[in-house]
Picture (cartoon, rainbow, N blue to C red):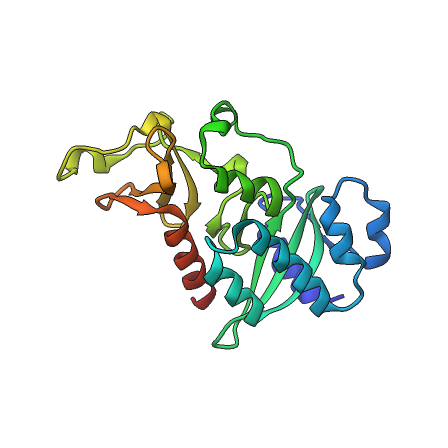
Length: 237
């Protein structure tokens, strides 16, 4: 077991007494709360078949929408491991990027409880492909060190109409706002206050908005094209 890896990941557990544990293959059968597909993945004793089964799940549900992300993972993903953090299970992705830098990404279990009341009430209005990702691939997939540059967990999806947000950009908009913040949620976070947001009243054909507290919004972007591009950019950072 790589203690340096564990020590590194512990820095980002988001809890003072947080812990990280990598689960051995022999232990997996003792856990009864994992997605069915994860048992198949981690029954494999060697890394390459594990990776291919996992990427097969990505391809099955979002092979077109996330084709560049999947292609990058296919080329640069070195290892996947089952990880327990603060009593939650995730898949730890070890990526060695094009420059040789090691990056750790986390994909949380899609079986987790839905802990976002504003979003839960309108979940059926969110585009189907987004729901497919969260229901079948991961409840969030993102860079461990920042908790960003990916699709955030459902509990961290930002309700843009929340009174806690101070959107100073609203006073400086150069043209009328084209989304309603009270029906908009940010699913992708770049870690610097910029979101790829879905307004569920205006999201046909995966229409989305790049929304920031400081920069002018970009309307009518394709959600998946933008997310796919930015995730690959994150891998290369």
